[in-house]
Image (cartoon, rainbow, N blue to C red; front, side, top):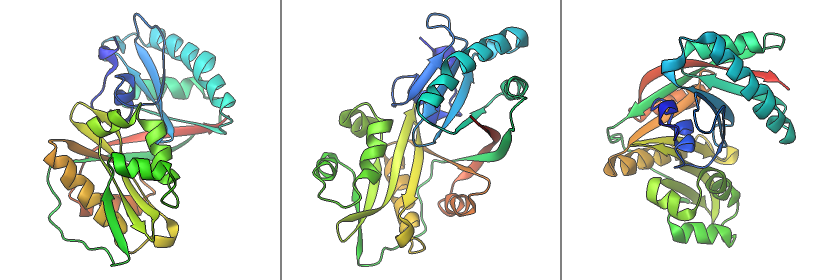
Length: 265
């Protein structure tokens, strides 16, 4: 129904609009959509997707965008008790129109980088003996729900907010967790999927950082996804120097730089 809005550069959001991944989306017209705003839990932000064939009519796009943002999206953000509206778009025209629409706000911005890889990680990495890695399967999910692992929410919150069911996750995605004394201290999670593109969401517990866990998880994630014929996408902001360095270490190549914006509600 929304094929004209799909954008393979943004699998985090297009996967939601396509009904593959779980998230929230609003369109300007269910039957003749030219604009969509989607929200990703793992990203923690919104993306504006547009029918590129309509971009030449800026006046119409601006009017539809205004109605969508002010009548649907911002009220929902307030209901969630979010204090900021964070958004991005692939098209400069949309960025320009959004800046015009929210011009009375104190608008902040930062660059976001997107990387991709289709190659396995060759660099060897090791975990200390007190840690071990698990590929997330139904058994791991069930154990997490039974609270057999401390800090199970690191997995369960992502699973609940990013995928429609366990089966959907297992069919379309991949994840691993690192355990330390049966506590989940690290996760590398496929948060969305569109076509053959899968998006990385990675986190290491603050008490266990700088021990090679992130490199080990990311390497396993990339290699496992490549074996499933997927292209892995890694998105991070300019200020996240550690994330950019890890992406480079795992062989990712930058293919896109875009601004994202936010303002206080």
